[in-house]
Image (cartoon, rainbow, N blue to C red; front, top):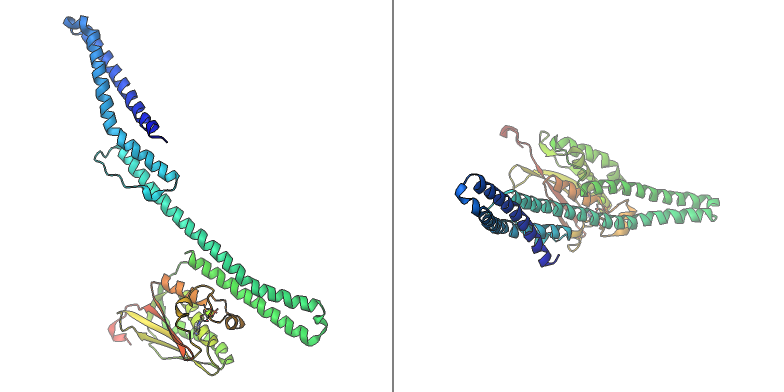
Length: 362
Ligand SMILES: Nc1ncnc2c1ncn2[C@@H]1O[C@H](COP(=O)(O)OP(=O)(O)O)[C@@H](O)[C@H]1O
Ligand SMILES: [Mg+2]
C-alpha cells in the first residue's frame, strides 16, 4: 500500500470524526443562541459557523494525534503477518493504554503465536520428509532381497530341495528384518514427534534389570557371551517409565552381545554417582569390537551404523541407540558412551534415585 493511500485513510477517519462533532456542536450552539440568549439572536449563524470551524479543527487535530501513528503500526503489523515477516514485528510502546493499544498488543501477541506454530509445523514437515527418505532407503534392502530369493525360486530353484530351503530361510530372515524395522520405526517416530510420553513412576531397579537380562540370556548363550549382573541393593527405586527403561536396557544389552567377540562378556553395573547427589549410574560394558572415536558422536543418530553389513546380518535396524537417546533425554537423564576399538565399549545412563531412609542406603 502506498504512503499516500495509508495516510488518506487516517485523514478520512479524522475528517469524518471532525465533521460529525463540529456539525453537532454548531447546531447545538445555533439553537442555544436562538432560544436562550435573546441578545445574541442576530449573531447565532456567525457563532455557529465559528464554533463549527473551531470544533472541526480541534477534533481533527486531536484524532490525528491519537490515531495516526498507531494506525500505521496496526497496518504494518498486519502486513507483516500476511507476508510472514515476523522478525520485523516490534513490541508496541505507547502511553495511551486504550482500545487501540489493546488491539495492537493483541495482534502482536497473536502474531507471535502464529510464528511459533508455523515454526513447529515446519519442523514436523522437515522431519517427516527426512524420515520418509530414510525409511524408503531402509525398506529397499530387505524388500529387494526377498524379491530376489522368490524370483530365483520361481525360475527353477524351487525344484532343488536343498537350495529352496536355504532361499526360503534367507527370505524369512529379511521378512523378520522388516518386522523389527516397522516396530522400531513406529517407536522412534512417536518419540521424535513427542507423541509418546514417558509415564514416570517409582520402580524397583533390581527387578527390571534382572527380568530384562534373563529375557536376553538365550541370545548371549547362542553367541557364547557371559552376561554378568554385578550385585546391587534390591531396594533401590528409581524414577522412570518402566517399559521405556526396559527398552533402553534391551537395546544396550543386545548391542553388547551383537558387537562382541565369541566368548566375550557383557557386564551390568549399578553404582552411586560420584558427581551428582541422588543419582545412580547404570552401565553396560562389553568386551567387543568397540567404536572408533570419529564414529562415537554419530552412533545415536537414526540409521547410523559403523558396519552396515554386520548390523544387518544381526537383525539391526540402526535405530536402537537413537531410541535409547530419546528415552533417556525424555527422562531428563544422560547417556554417556566410552569406547576403545578392539577392547570394548561402556554405555552408561544416569538414573534418579527415589529418596529412601539413610539406614537402607547401599
Ligand atoms: N556395544 C557396541 N559395540 C560396538 N559398536 C556398537 C555397540 N553398540 C552400537 N554400536 C554401533 O553403533 C551402531 C548403531 O547402534 P544401534 O542404533 O543399536 O543400531 P543397530 O544395532 O541396529 O545397528 C551399530 O550399528 C554399531 O555399529
Ligand atoms: Mg542395536
